[in-house]
Image (cartoon, rainbow, N blue to C red):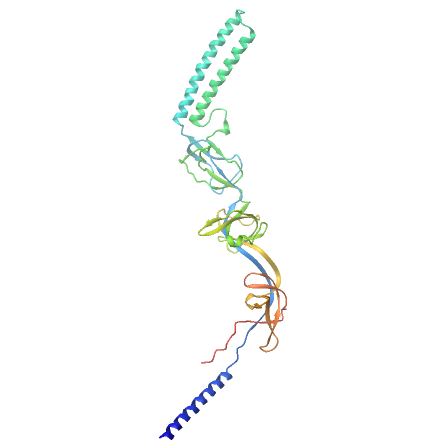
Length: 369
């Protein structure tokens, strides 16, 4: 009985040892891990940061009335080109009762003074004819009468201006005629016939009748995050892409970076502006959303590799790659890097276009099922 148990145990040991040896043999017989290689190539690398914003006119002028009233007639619409002095609209004055009453009282007072000066002039003429007063006294009475006459005429004109917005002799200077103050394109006319408008004065900016701008001078206005503002500077080139104009890139120059940022949604944003170069073939509408790529650095037609191929020494932190020196045999080569766009990086020295560079992601061959 004991011999039988012993034999069984020995048999189990032999089987276990044989299974282990077979497993090790199979492992050694598996295909070794192989590494793919890639080669450097000529590329243009652009390092940039992106800002979002919109296209706006460099100068936009808002036309406002200098008298309150109701829009009687409009002569332009959005998209029209106007010259300085062209008629935009006409306003029908709704007189202010208090101002109208004051103007009427002014006429009455001026008339009383005029009648008084006329009586005085007649009296002075009579005295001068009798030789009682001198020529100088008569001339003074004449001047006083002329001044009173002028004051009376001015009071009547003031009454007409308060009542109707204009008076005889003013022509194109009438307050009721709103004219363009600059030449350019009418971007919008936010009022309609019948709308009431308020005059522009020291206490009120007034109602906007029209917005006029030179659409040949457009700018990009956007914002960049505080993490990016330290990388940019004025006079850097911009590449503007407009969502509504697919496939078109517009060149611009960064000419303004706000010295102060504003917090928006928990992040500090800095305003930037860039002047677009004139485009004769494409009309860019004001207010279009756009993205601006700020070109931080650019390297044209340089030797480049993928950044994923670059390794860094643990001690010196210097970059290097592994170059194939035989079948699945690699040797280390130190390299000097240049401009990077996050995917490709310029290689200034260390490798050539013929070198096969090791890809660190090992590829294991799949077993056939």
